[in-house]
View 1: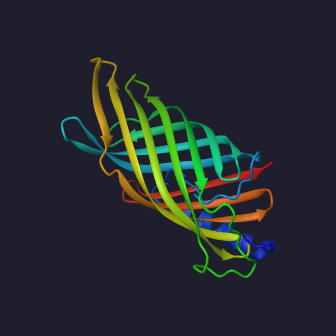
View 2: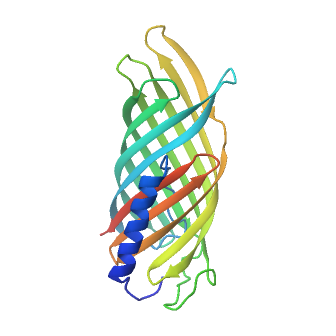
Length: 240
């Protein structure tokens, strides 16, 4: 990104857009963030995320239903070698299957992003879509949730994607990419002691978003997902 500071007016515009997306969207989505990150080797961060997404799942008999999943979490980031970035998160999760009761629980997740153009730098006057940086993103999450009747779900999700970023204005950028997302799990029923295997119906999707680096130590982001899951995601990271 360029060396110019993001003006207060631009920051307020970005914050207003993020709030508007949060209010308007029927669901939020898993945050992949910018694949071509700017973390340096040994740099740490703390962050918070809001994830609440709608995803279609299919059971072992071919029946489909929608799961509405909301997640609130916090995590740590670690810069690795000037190209890699490892994020570890702990999340509280709420899952409402179509026609069922809401189940609550927790999940842990790990994400690795690899900047393929770590040595490239955006000039201060770089215009959108004139310079790109590319990166990879991989993530895994493990979670479990249960309702008041003892029914619930255990699940795993593995994601791998490729994307890029380009400067938008000053210290803001756009990013986008494609992802393969594998969701598998097991629904269990306490009364009958039965279990049903489930998996995500649409494994291939697209994501895109924008980031504002308000200062050298604060990143705000909003992200859109389509096809494999629908909605947006919001996050904030403070660099240490």
